[in-house]
Image (cartoon, rainbow, N blue to C red; front, side):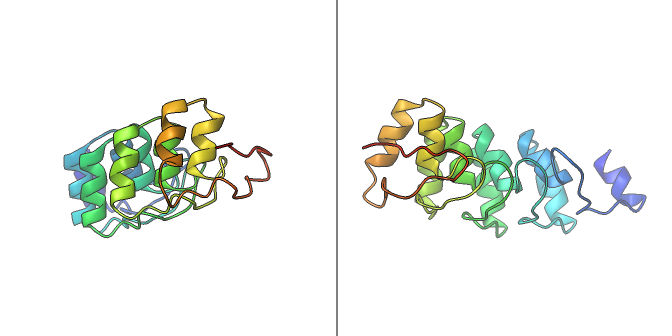
Amino acid sequence: IVELLLDQGADVNAQGSKYGTALQAAARGNEHGIVEFLLGKGADVNSQAGDYGTALQAAAYRGYREILQLLLDKGADVNAQGGEYGTALQAAARANERETVEFLLGKGADINTQGGEYGTALQAAALCGHQTMVELLIEREQCQCSRLPNYKLRRVPLK
């Protein structure tokens, strides 16, 4: 269907509502083949749209590390901000995706970046009651627990 639509002139980077772009929807659905196809057709790997912000955030929220690696290999910005979750790391922390958080940190994700509805990855984990995720994050030397919270939350996770 994707190929048919593109053959009929559909814009590979067209933006919609909830899922933003076809690439974001494919990443959220763990559709590896479609993600590869769309990237091959010129889909913007860092396009900002929809609830997830970027395809990387959509894949991170669902814990799809193969999709994450593919997107990163194609130039996705591991610290790109946008959407409800702020960054891919914040999305993974919010979803309590431990292995994905560790993967993203290993790829250079900034643990202290603020943005989105949740502030930082630590604030997202704390707000959602993910104690083991909070512990994982505060054990990181770079984690700054004293950073000001997102103004919407008015909460600071305690160490």
